[in-house]
Image 1 (spheres, rainbow, N blue to C red):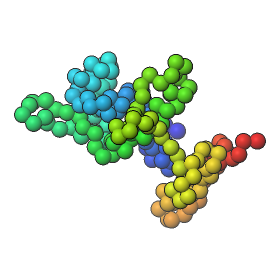
Image 2 (tube, rainbow, N blue to C red):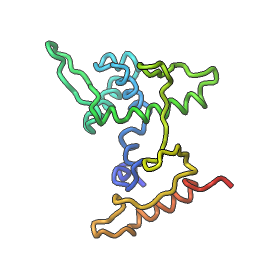
Image 3 (cartoon, rainbow, N blue to C red):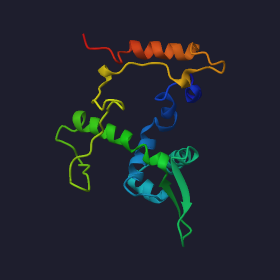
Amino acid sequence: MRYDDLADFPCSITRPLVILGDRWTLLVLKTSFTGIRRFNEFQRALGVSRSRLQDRLDRLVDHAILAKQKTPGSAHEEYRLTEKGHDLYPILMAIKDWGDVYMAPEGPPVHYQHRGCSGEAHVRLECDCCGDDLTARDIELAPGPGLLTEDGDRSSRDGAELMRAQNHAGAGKPRQ
């Protein structure tokens, strides 16, 4: 499958990867959450080439994850997180949690603390019905409305193949 085709692939993990799936985009987002908003500040913080940074910023603006705004009383423009951008924070936190466990042998390099009580912030996967904590072993995949074809047929070839591949990959299967 070609990279361009992934944007239309019926999978809510694959589609966002078309936008977010490279390290520079994720680092731009991480940096945005620290309060950096201007192009030169991003470049200084990340050490990325101007052209690569501009490409990533433009992509995030095109997808309404960042909004480009004029700074009041200045000729400068800023890149500000939109609500859609803020909704990506748990993804970055999940990557951080994984990195703290598997890539920080000396311990977490930074603590992400709750301002209200100084407790550690972590991502938690839970059932929206019963509230139980979940792992991949607790999940099974079922067709959703996004797999419907224009005819309303659930048996689209891409959707059926996707479900088979994901279920056979071990999601929801108990460890033997």
